[in-house]
Image (cartoon, rainbow, N blue to C red; front, side, top):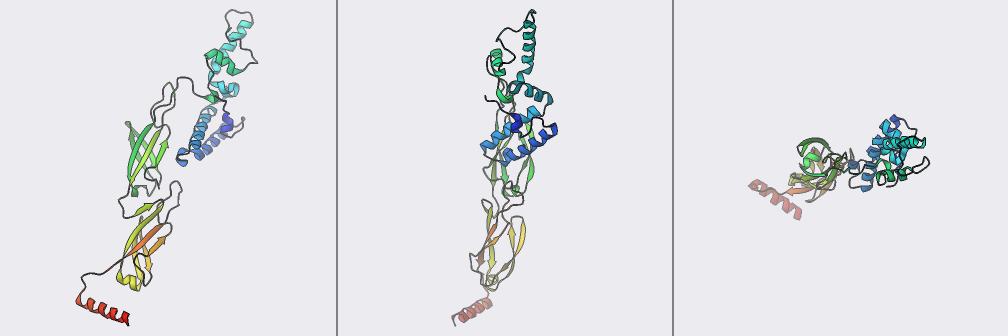
Length: 301
C-alpha cells in the first residue's frame, strides 16, 4: 500500500502543535462528514482518512513513532529490539539478529518484509487479521410532520440505545450513515457503521413535491365574486389571504418560503402553492333563488 502522509491529509505542518492538529481535524471532519455529503463516496473516503490521520497524530507516542518510522510506525518496537540485537552481534557479542541482513541505510519497508513475512501496511494502516465490524441496516418510520423540524430520537439497535439527531427536511427513502454504530470489529478492528433508511408517511392535506407544498382552499362564492379576506392553513399555522374580486375557480396563489424545509440548509424552505376551489351554495331558500334569478336577468341585459 502506498505511503499516506497524515500531515498532508490534515493540512498541517510537521511542526504543528497538538492544538493546531485538533483544530485542523475538526474543520475537515465537519467539511467531509457523511451526513453533510450523502451518497458522496469521495467525501466518505476522505472522512475515513482524516479520522485515521487524527488517531495517529493526536496521540503523542504514536506521532513520535510515525515521525521516526513513517508507514512502518506500528512496528517501531520490533524494529528497535532487532536493531539492538544487530548492534550487539556486530560488536562481537553472542546472540544478535542475523536474519535479513538489514543495514542502517536500508529501506524500512524491505526490512519489515523480511522480518514479518510481508510488507507492513502503509500510512498507519491496520495490522493483518484486523477486520471491520458488520454494518447494520435499520429503517425508521416517521410522519411528514415529524421531519418538519429538527429533533432527536432514541433508537434501539441490537439491544443498544442510540441517540440521534434527525435534521429537518429528511426525505422518504433517504439513507444516512452513522459511523461506528455497527458491529464490533475483530482483533482490534474498527466498528461497523449503521445505515439508517427513513420511511416518511404523509397523512396531511398537503402534497409534497421536493421542497414545495401543494394544497387546496375552499372559497365561498361570495368571496370569489366580491373579494375579501380569508384564513388559510399552512403546514405550521394559519395565514390571512386577500382574495381579489372575480377570482376564478382553480386560481393558484404562491406563498414564498411557506413550503417544506430543505435538508441540511437551515432557514431555507420551499414554497406553498394554494389552489382556490369555489364552493357553489346548495339548498337555496326561495328568497335566495329569487335574488339569483334577478342577478341572472341583470347579467343578460
